[in-house]
Image (cartoon, rainbow, N blue to C red):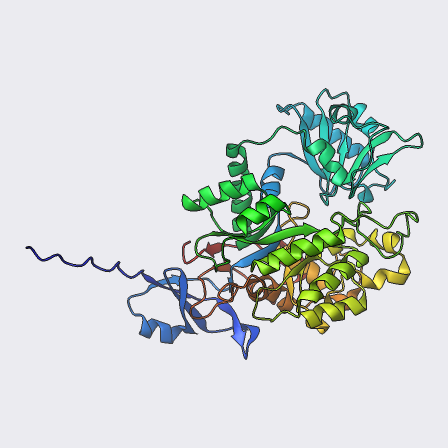
Length: 536
């Protein structure tokens, strides 16, 4: 019989040396900018980090990529985004940042002339930017004389503004009861005004035409490519439903995902039961189920965040419980027992207090384990911050919420509890791990705007002049660390968000020194090159 030769091993990937930029690495286990260093990568991993002269001698046949100064950073990790929402927002009417209701209405009218869909869909309006600061009405939209039903999501995603045609199609009238965890705003006679808050939004959203698989896939790829262009190598997609999950898996099998995706499922019993029977494993491709997203309360801007005491500007309202405490406890326990990561939306001080109490029953959590996360953690009492640190609970924060909301947060909270708002320095002082995100499409996902917001607590107009509660700022180094190394650890992936031997070769290059640029220039930075698992 002829001898059968064993198959030859696959050839080793070409070694590449990235040289010429300062490298974001570690010095005595602390993040630091390293000068005179270069990075060797092979395949999907970092092979070596050493002085460039040493690497050139060690790997003489390596391909050398000369970077013209600037900074080589780990790929950034967007710790809280909504990918399909971002993709959708790139196709729909955008109303972000418009400071006058008349201008908003003008833009809606102009958009309607080119809208070819059965519904006119948009997002981004914020009544807090308008002089009157009051919610708009269905009548405002009716006066535009647009035949389509209209649904416009508020900037925070926790309220919608609809016209009378949409109310009629959804059978919302004077007799409609507020759904649990939601609120229908009404006039003095009890008639719906056209604003639906939190779970009441579903009364209209559930009658919208369902997107087909092609539309969902297109929006996923639009969102992911947009994030990649900004410098993100990974994203935590918060609230993935069954249809999106199936499409993610198909795109992953077809190797079409441009960056890595950590999916947090919507809080649906059937979906959770079906998916969490699989063992939790480290990332192997570019997609994995990471955990479950649970809503405790609503948002501060629409007065749905759950507070201990009533809103200062709405004395009869303390906000909403989106999910009951009993159900939250049950789901958290299930997710933890299955070995996955609960990610709980909590904005108000009462919501944060209750979820910290629930999580503490199952902690404290080891720093090396997959720890539960609180998403937003915006208004937190000092004693609860101490409990967060003691239990090793992660705070997933969005600094741009602070700089977007600073002008009206005092009116919501009043002076007596204002110091509870966005307490990042207090959290760091009590050993609470912070990871950064944007909540895109609620806010711009631009990471350099987020880093500037964390460091200054000012918006792009340098307001407020000293920053909002300036004692709570983060340093730039802390903000970058929260976007990289801490974000990787929070995912249970210590080989992500860091440049060292054995780490994933997720890297970005910017042509400036990240620690030396001023705030105005920082907000304008752009990522020039990006490698995902060693591939540019």
